[in-house]
Amino acid sequence: MDRVRTVAQGKPTAAGKKGAAGLGVLLALLATVVWSGSFVATRDMADSVPPVQAVFWRWIIAALSVAPFAARQAWQQRALIRRHLGFVSLATLFGVALYNTLVHQAGLTTSASNMGMIMAASPVIMALYARLGGERLGKRRTFGLLLAAFGVLLLVGDGSLGFDFGAGDLWMFGAALSFASYSALLKRKPAELGGLAFLITTFVLGALMLAPAYAVSVAVQGGFEVTVGTAGPLLYVGVFSSAVAFFAWNKAISVIGAARAGVVYYLQPVCVAGLGLLLLGERTGPAQLLCMALILGGVALGSRR
Image (cartoon, rainbow, N blue to C red; front, side, top):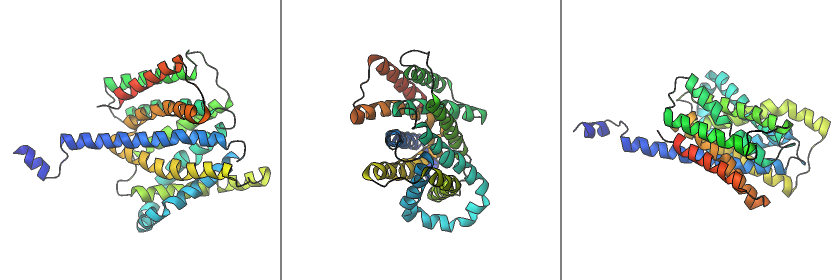
């Protein structure tokens, strides 16, 4: 009888919580897979589109792609957006303007595989933020986090713990810190602020933040030629890596939290390696397979309650 009353009152059942958690993990996985492809696209256009210009047009395309679905909600919640403009601006700075500029800057001097592997360090920072915020990680999730982190370190070090980072790798560590900060901030997003309204507002604000740097880049470096080789990657990062992936990631964090979503994000090196094999013909050796097994094992442990 108590169980029937609980369902009737609209409280989530154990099965409902499990289903919601499963959906959250799938959304985090979707974002991770799509973002893995963005590293390949970013590296592909690194020699033809200056980083700031690429990121500026990325958010213009992203804003236009979500406008048919998000513009109405954003207009209806304009007063709410103004009230929380400080939070929205800070999230935009870390997650839209800064993070993606650092990624594109890194693409000038490091490989797509390195970009994906180093970005897998961001879940460690997410977990630390979550712990500082009072979230209990639990022994199993902590062990999964450490196991996956160990796999990432071995993968970056090509099978050993001794490795040397170049300039592009350091840019990517900065990007990892910025993305983790953005993910931690999402936990503080006002519940009444709609997801689509938040999304399009950050896209527009991100483009505005980058506009001065974009103008300087065009004046100093000149523009870029619009070809299939430049438009294709820009459309991918603008529509899929921005509109689709950011919506999925933001929703995942609202369901399962930044720490658990961050553990799923450890799959990114595996996804990038797979895309490298399919699109670039890069082979994966036994050492890399072992590291991926460690990462996958850590994800399996860390993504469960």
